[in-house]
Length: 129
Image (tube, rainbow, N blue to C red; front, side, top):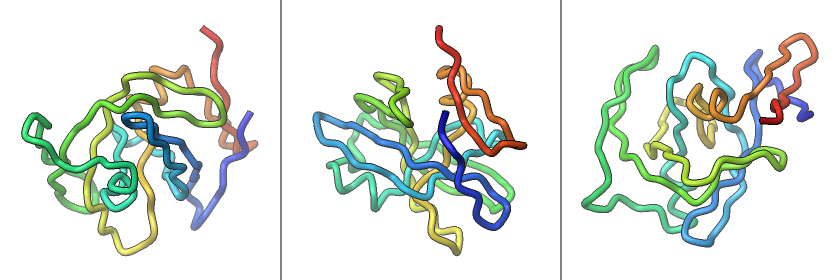
């Protein structure tokens, strides 16, 4: 069971992303059940060689903060506290939201991983499948 970090009344986690054998730990990732997809900060993604390539799909995300153009990429693995998904698709964008954020952990990951979010105890756990 992972303890969530609460900042400004929002839950944050640290996740690990592995791409083509290189890994980065991404801090300040917002756990967001209101986000359909998982998004990484482009500056952090670049540290493990994730840059736009011609085959990457381009998408426009819309949310409370406005619109953002991102590209999508399948990475080797996305992991939190030892629980991970292989071959997982993430979106990469500038994430210029006016505060420090490494990414957004969306419903795509949470559902596929069988996440259980306990807001009373501020913990994140995963069902064993």
